[in-house]
Amino acid sequence: ENCRFCAQSAHNHTGAKEYPLLSTDELVEDAKRQASKGVLRYSIVTSGRRLNNEEVSAMCEAVQRIRKETDLAVCASFGLLDEAQFRALKAAGVSRIHNNLEASRRFFKEVCTTHTHDDKIAAIHAAQAAGLSVCSGGIMGLGETVEDRVDMALSLRALGIKSVPVNMLNPIPGTPFADRPLLTMEDMRCGGVSVYFAGGVHSFGGWSWAAAGSRAQLLCFWCQCRHFWRHADDSRNYR
Image (cartoon, rainbow, N blue to C red; front, side):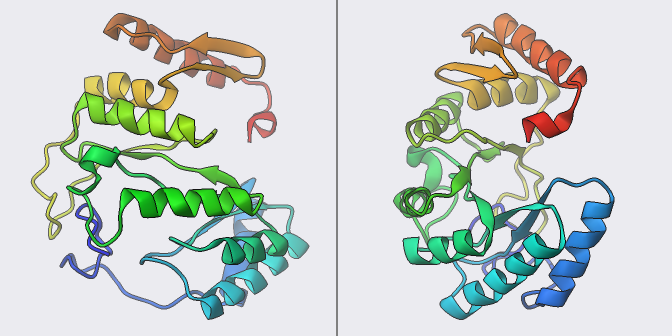
């Protein structure tokens, strides 16, 4: 895929290391190591458009062993799979799929042209139809407008996404976005919160807030969120 931010894209020349899928034994060994450090969720991530059926089967075997030999919940990010592939992963023990929209529908063509915004949405619908939870968000700092960020957030809300990662672009030499300026802290505070909480009331552990419209309100809201997480008694309740 030709995602213009990505160090791993075959279209970009970044010197990123290339290697095949990790074996089941390697994944299980690493999962056990992470579990021993208190990790609650283990995510397996691949690059490229999608895994083929043989690769999905190999990942299912790894997931089954991880679920059998540890107490870890398992997440997966395997690209634009279809519903049958997602159902196989769910049966193996995957509970959550990660598939970022990355950007708004309007701006997406500036980020990638080898697949579309609709391809992303189709994969998310397929995962949900298979009974999987979906984690989906995007990247700030690609050259998008504030309106694009809000449009992406509203698309995520329409999809029923509850877990929304907000990423900040790290411009990588060798990618078309290498010259994008780094976001300021102000961008991160205001833009990130507006994306993450756009369009509704969100509740954490019985605490609810509505996303505000003004800069000052958004910053206050961000401080409230930080205060809540810092004082949460047991992070296991919020996984």
